[in-house]
Amino acid sequence: MSDTLTMVERGVRLSARNVEALLTAVFLPIMLMLLFVYLFGGAINTGTAYVTYVVPGVLLLCAGFGAAMTAVSVSQDMTTGIVDRFRSMDIPAASILAGHVVASVARNLISTALVFAVAFGIGFRPSAGPVQWLGAVGVLLLFIVAISWLSAAVGLLARSPEAAGGFTFFVSFLPYPSSAFVPIDTMPGWLRGFATNQPVTSVIETMRSLLLDLPLGASPWRAVGWCVGIIAASVAVAGVLFRLRTR
Amino acid sequence: MPDNQAIEAVGLAKSYGATKVLDGVDLAVPPGTVFSLLGPNGAGKTTTVRILATLTRLDGGRARVAGYDVVGQRREVRRRISLTGQHTAVDEPQTGEENLRMIGRLAGLSRTAARRRARELVDEFELGDVAGRRVATYSGGLRRRLDLAASLVGRPEVIFLDEPTTGLDPRSRLAAWQMIAGLAGSGVTVLLTTQYLEEADRLADRIAVLDGGRVVAAGSPAELKAQVGDQRLDLEFADVDAFEAAARRLAARVIRRDETRRCLGVATDGSAAQVRGLLDEVDPDRGRLTRFAMSAPTLDDVFLALTGHPTGAGEDNAMKEAVGV
Image 1 (cartoon, each protein chain N blue to C red):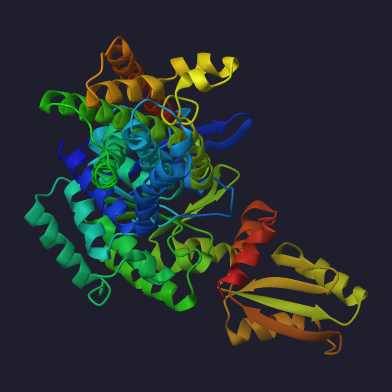
Image 2 (cartoon, rainbow over the protein chains, first blue to last red):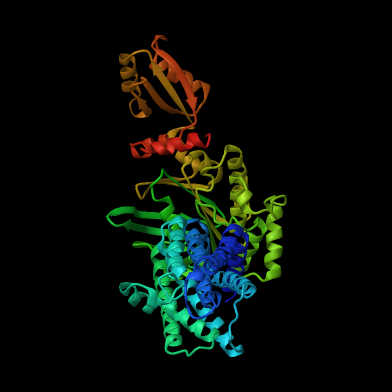
């Protein structure tokens, strides 16, 4: 446990010192939010103020960027000598990875707060009560943890930090074919099946329903199912990959 | 401890696919001594170290480090060793002192104890001026110094250093040698790998020469050098006939043979009497020997003398040139 705390401290410090990546992860989603709200938003009819519709999507986009940095950090650990030092000191793989995952969650909470602040400034008016707010943030947190563990596993799989960085690109694309920015029923038929069933949509629908006080339906269960599934699979795969990479 | 060796390996074997990397390596290192694994790239040095440091699983044989089995008692071993690999194992975005404190915490020290230990090592390794700077700004020599300091944080009994001076400039190498010699004086056991005969000679109490995954020779530096001589005398001849005649006369004493330059290398103790005698012996008429030169024997000479074949590592020499040796 004390090892994990030390590794968390390390992860947070490494993140805080990577200023460029931190600024990109925070400001890119804000830029995209402004872009969507002021440029595309007028042409998209969602039944509510577009900014209110789009905020959950921007938060997930943000989470994707922030978490994908984890893949790069993990890959850097594996390609420099530091992992051998940790292993020869009997530090468990779970502690090494957990340090990066917790740092990722911390990064994302900061950028989430900033996105909310800017969103309120430009007219985001949710109609959620305290319990619904808690639920929405909880689901977002779960998604961030899931995607951070997935990134950690990808970081172990990648042969170089650059390759791991490519994952950022992929993850940041996932919110587009979902209900994040446009309603799914405006998409072509062949895309609707994917958009409706992919994990991002269930998380976004849950957050949106909670924040806008709409009927929840089955999305919360699907969102939690997806996230827990991704966490379980990623932790298991990461364990196996770590053993394979360090044989 | 069942016996008093700090490191004991019997018949270590390791293959990657069809490639045999280690083919029965035996080692015995008494506590408090410096032991050097000497060999060219690909000889199996790093694999041996990784097995002994519990990072790589062995396919055959057995090994004990600090009295514990590297497979069955891995945790016990890990508590008593430290490993400094070929790549620097410190975080670049952290400062030198932060790195040392982190390693201290991971070694089980309390926050205060880790801070105190970090300060001690900063002083000991003369890192005071740079301890508050991020490692990313350090030179190669400074990084190595921090790396060595980091490997001492947990007061290990056995320290593994994998090519600790490869890639360093001559001055940093000299500084690293002084530090390693200092470690040895403090009672810990050091196992270091190197491609440089000079390094093994300077630091090690005993040397094992590794070639193709086997120990081809072992002994003190003096014993090994006795097989190749203290100095190598290179003799260059005016024509092929003289070269061949001298080669026949010297026979087994030739440790290096270069036909294109008509040059023969002979082991000597470096004394004037022996050199004069050799010169007279190969060129009694004083006319067919054009040049001679004395040099310290290299790893290649040791290999040629011990195995009958050169290291065959062209990159080895390129690397020596790159680091200015």
